[in-house]
Length: 226
Length: 346
Image 1 (spheres, rainbow over the protein chains, first blue to last red):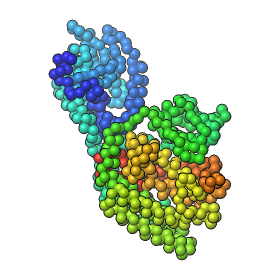
Image 2 (cartoon, one colour; image 1 turned 90 degrees about the vertical axis):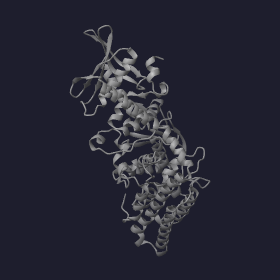
Image 3 (cartoon, helix red, strand yellow; image 1 turned 135 degrees about the vertical axis):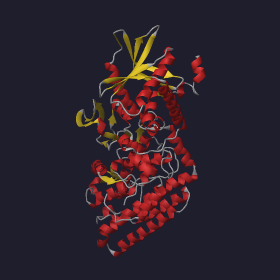
Image 4 (cartoon, one colour; image 1 turned 180 degrees about the vertical axis):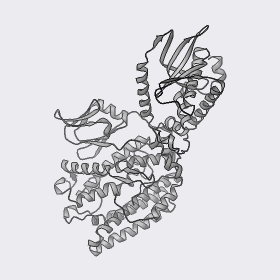
């Protein structure tokens, strides 16, 4: 075990690593994260779909060498410090003074978002690469399919601190086994693939089932055909 | 949530279902009889000597499509299950609730209450639609049954343990099936109902009810499995190896409207007649193959109808109800909801 691992490794062994994707799910919505990673609700379907999308992408992205930059695709990575594991879409190996420097690039289908989920996920990848390659990874990039543009991301201290904090929160959520209560936000919820399973509207409105049940027995309108 | 998907019933002796690309193909004697897109299917029920290919089986298990084998008479034989999926924490919560007398009683109360008021709704409906045309004794017996079911519903609401609730459920069913014959509008003595018989059904009405309950059990069971609950560990129904107790629990709130009323309308509208049944030497009455087909078609049509879900307050198809209720039960067991809201027909 390296000095770094023994110094900052969270509890547990490799089985306790949380998937990198959980960070992004959590930043989008802590309840979505718990539905997927705790309740494993429809996880198979979701992951199947995500895996397919990723493979379509990596199929296009053969490991290649261009202008002296080698690109590794679908690279399995882990960070003991963050306690996460996952697969990096693409890691470019840039020649730097003294040693090669990994440069993670994550491919997103959509467009840049207001929240920092994509950056945190990329930063987690960078921190994993730092551990695995034993070098500094100061920079990476996000590529958005909709805008077809590449955005550089600098892994500065605030982003690293945020990533560490989010990883801790995600771990705490997953370990608690409890699903956070829903809160309905139209824009977010209507875009969420787990909407029908989460039922944020009714579950945040209707907390008292006993009174609902009593009320539904009391108002007895004439039978209505079903 | 899955869309409202259809169940594929394979009823013809010797039929073979297989996957062909993105389609499910059913063949009889090597001739293609049916071709449906695989993503349209939510469950496969095989009757008698019918089979399906390993590839189709694998596809179904991956997609969470339930496969059930029934005997040619509709008796449950086997269910094909893939790797244990879903969520162990939810199942643990389910087992803990089953062992917590208070929690188990609260869930059981919801289920029994819903069944009773749904039975009462069937009585009320008959009174409303046909009460005027009935002779006085029949009408009086239905009115008495309605009052008794109301009384039982009030008693269910009072604190009681699971055993007490089981007793009330039995009482309500006795009242309900005591007047069931009055729901049948056909004068034909062939369809007289003289009480519930199950193993085997001893008259055509019981044969119809048993068959519909089997179909509904299949749907409830796969709904529970889809949300990650263990269909064998119930609250109202005591545990018994091999019995899908929770599926039978979930079934209760659906029986009056989804099975009983469908059976009644098939009889009352003359969609099934005496030729749909076969009486065995031992007195058992079974549906013929044509009879089963008629029921299956009516059942599938019924599942497509939509209604306003009283708790979720969204329009949902009837076929989706077992899934929705299984989901609400899971949400309660996980602590998202402070009770289980059963399906109540108004």
